[in-house]
Length: 125
Image (tube, rainbow, N blue to C red; front, side, top):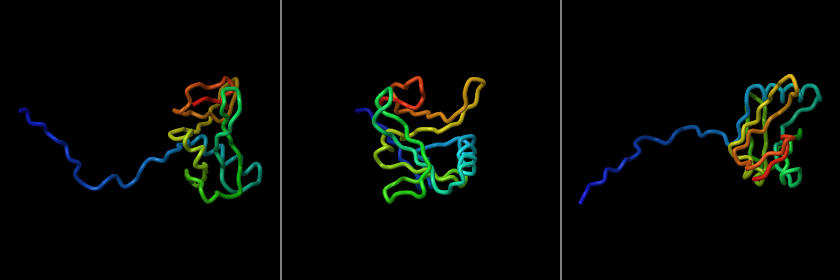
């Protein structure tokens, strides 16, 4: 009979886990600027709603405070909140801000999207 080597993890588990939602420094700066321009304080709410060209649409709005069931992500002082249902569709997503000669705006890089609409705000999972 052949012997099988087993690998055993030694030491404590990693102290910090990666956030479920990511945001680039450019996106965070643009969010901060938008809060200042609108003269509002609070959090940025990301979510998913039924509808749109591909079946689901991204929700992106200011909110005064998180709800009790929200997952809160903080990036350099900017808080982004996501409700538990939306988190199923947004897990692993990166929020970015892109600028080009043709257009500028927030971009959702979502690994859960099987198909994206040309508008960039609608997807199917």
